[in-house]
Each structure stands twice: as structure tokens, then as C-alpha cells.
Length: 142
Picture 1 (tube, rainbow, N blue to C red):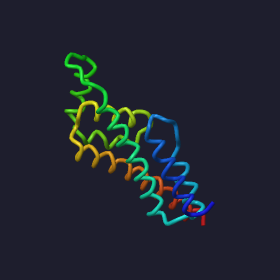
Picture 2: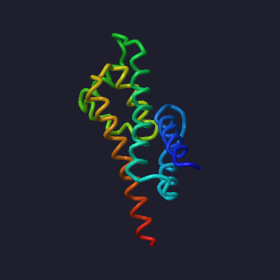
Picture 3: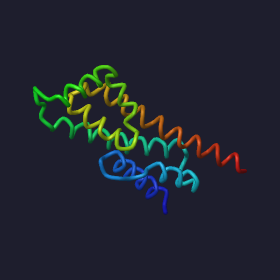
């Protein structure tokens, strides 16, 4: 596999993993790190970009759902997100829950800037941690 195809595969896999579709972008990142297809920084950046855009897609989709004025579920969700604010999107990387958090943040009309900042930060930290553990494991075995 060429380096360009590897990066495109990582981007695509990371994007799809951030939507409600199943995927495992971490496994792909680890495989590409082990194959040394690109620099670790480039691989983490591409995975973060793809996954962040997927999370932003969920955020946008959430905005498409109409707000109801009298919804018990909305009041609970809004109370929880008001307590933690956009910083709750640091957990946007978590399987299943992260996708729902992004949808919910859009549905509740959280401010774009802070929401996208925390969404991207959470995803970047996750991929950086996966890469660091992988690279540390490689150096440990050698």
C-alpha cells in the first residue's frame, strides 16, 4: 500500500468511526504506525482530522433535529450539558457515547467554537495516547 493510500484509508476510517457507523480507527492507526507508513505526527494528525470531521458531522446532524419546548429528555440532557458545557465533548472519542454527545451538542445548539474545540481536543488526545503507547511498546520490544 502506498503512503498516500495509507493516509487516505486512515482519514476515511477515522471519519466513518466518528459517525454512527461502526469502525475501529485506533487499530488502523496502530497498524500504520507499526508499518511505518508515515511519521507518527502525520498519522495522528490525519486520524484526528478525519475523526473530528466525523464528529462535526454528527454535531451538524444534531442541529437538524427540531427542538421541542416541552421534552423531559431534553431538559435532562440540557441540564447535564449546562453543568459541563462544551467541555463534555472531550469525551467525544468514547465509543457510542461520543457519537451521541456530538449529536446532542448540536441538538441543544451549543456554541460552535467551544464545542468544536473540545471535540477536536478530545479526539487528538486519544490518538496521541494510542500512538505513544504503540511507539513505547515498539521501543520496549527492541
